[in-house]
Length: 382
Image (tube, rainbow, N blue to C red):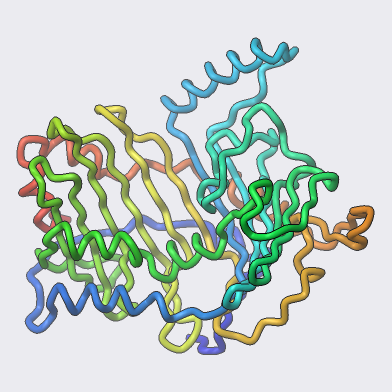
């Protein structure tokens, strides 16, 4: 296993990288000596593993047929309202890519929408903490947004060269897609920060068993909100051998009426030790299920195409500027030249991938509706 702090995936091997495998889960009893505090402390220490990184991430959101039908109707209404001659093509899949590098409070980033239709129907940029794109406006030649941050100074670009701005970090007009936060939250911490704090302080976590996930032994923690009805239920699969990574996390939200409102499933797979003691997954998948029996709504998937961590970084915006397939050559007139053609390979690899099947958790919740609290505090059978 490489300890050079660098994982490189060639574009020729991208199709293989983007093929995921479902985790198999089996039950067992906790081993002696492992406690809830030990496991949660292990998760918490992951936040300090990565001090700098250079990353390319591929992002894919697939909507369910039901949600797709809702948005087709929405597109028809928009077409009438805006007097469009044709209804914009509404696909079930959004594809995007982000490239960024950071060290401390310095960061350069870029984001490109790779949909053939040019529309961001499902808010794929929300994966990066940004606002949802106006669904009535197509992207311009795969360009979307990019930026450079150095302390409190920030440069951002969106849509067209006329919209480049330079200003302070509090400038309301500037775009702040938090690529760094997405990377650390999904791939490094996985279940750290505020969610972990809430789990410790408000949900009475307890060790409920062990399970095998992708051949790795995991300890399973169950936790429940301490109000009646509980605000939520969590179940986490934690693997000490992979640096206390959370390889699966289930969240169930319960309303004041005691009914399940929504649930989500996070799974992390394809772990590699890319630097000394730094185990990161190649793929993170999030399945979302809707309110009041609406069932599966969408599946979000993020793949690490390229990543290097904890290496000295030289921040030259010219290395990243700036849309994904282009770079700025003169900041005064915004002339663009193409220098990178990776987006097309990412798009092809994802489009050739079969549409995902939803995680079985929602169906299991319906089957255990009368005993959900007790069932979630157990390791589910294989």
